[in-house]
Image (cartoon, rainbow, N blue to C red):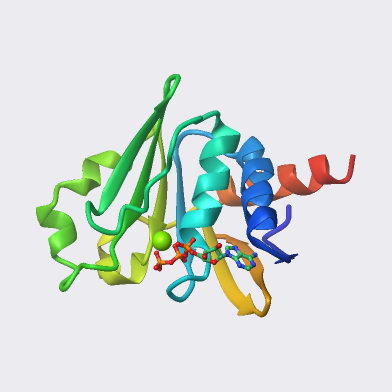
Length: 158
Ligand SMILES: Nc1ncnc2c1ncn2[C@@H]1O[C@H](COP(=O)(O)OP(=O)(O)OP(=O)(O)O)[C@@H](O)[C@H]1O
Ligand SMILES: [Mg+2]
């Protein structure tokens, strides 16, 4: 079982295509945190993931609405951005807890802004500037996350 993977993403197109490919090993009942500074590429990666999950329309940044919902066949995908939270308790007040359920994939930008309220992540994705591109690191936080990364490694090696 692998716990971690790293990759260089040379440009925006690579972030998108990596996300699209990575979506193949995702499934309902996963929580994914997206860490990285402003402009690192968290939303870009999410666009790629949603494309890979089969979503064909425009993916907006949820910065102003806090969450965008995508329904793809039976799967619900919630894309959160908590950058504008002033206090982690806003997370409870907003009623987001019910979105984290067995039928959904939750992708969360700026999870640190929700403090300890968020459920534990199956996968934590870190994106770092490595000009002119980016580096990505993905860590598994649960057994389900480890299974995803192991599946990714197996299918990449085919
Ligand atoms: N691998 C890459 N190499 C270079 N530029 C990239 C790469 N991936 C994405 N970008 C660019 O970096 C920017 C990332 O913007 P994006 O909105 O995805 O960042 P973000 O991490 O979601 O930021 P925020 O915290 O503000 O929501 C875009 O301009 C995109 O074109
Ligand atoms: Mg963003």
